[in-house]
Length: 236
Image (tube, rainbow, N blue to C red; front, side):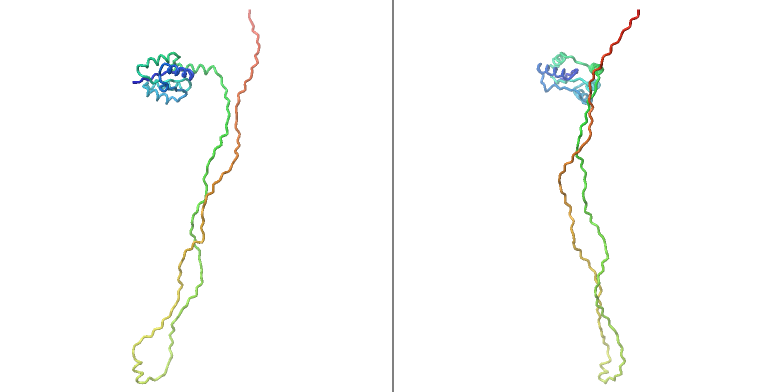
């Protein structure tokens, strides 16, 4: 079985010295983790996995958000005391002590920042193009065609002619006489023809564009302050 031994230290330099000491004491370097400037949630999750109470683990995570370095060493149960003694050769802090130490250090410092802007140029892509869309329209078309037309006319003529007896026998009888007439009518049909084709094609190329902009920089100037002499009055 293994045990997680943890130690909280003032800074990363101290933490590196602790890791070196653990390595020299025979502990494997890949079994020693160093956490610093890490979000509280990640540190809390790691320490809970190691078996620590969640509230205690979160207090370590909160302390590491601003300063310090945390060492987590996974060692065999029978070597846990040895690892703890090695860590105690250096100043091991509680989360509260680390926050208090960091607060005092910050109170003694006055800071000014050097700020510089950088011009970042990217490429924004827009999409455009052309679309082919077919539309159907109608128009009136007129064509002149010549048509033949036949008609059947009936003519009656008065005739005075006497039939011979043998002709009379033949004349009386039923018969049909037909005359047909042909009339032409216009017949319309439609035939589709392709008269034009429209195609879309895409051409690729490159062009260079020079982009300019104004960036700002804030510098910090150090000035000497002249000392002023004063007089002290004593009252008898």
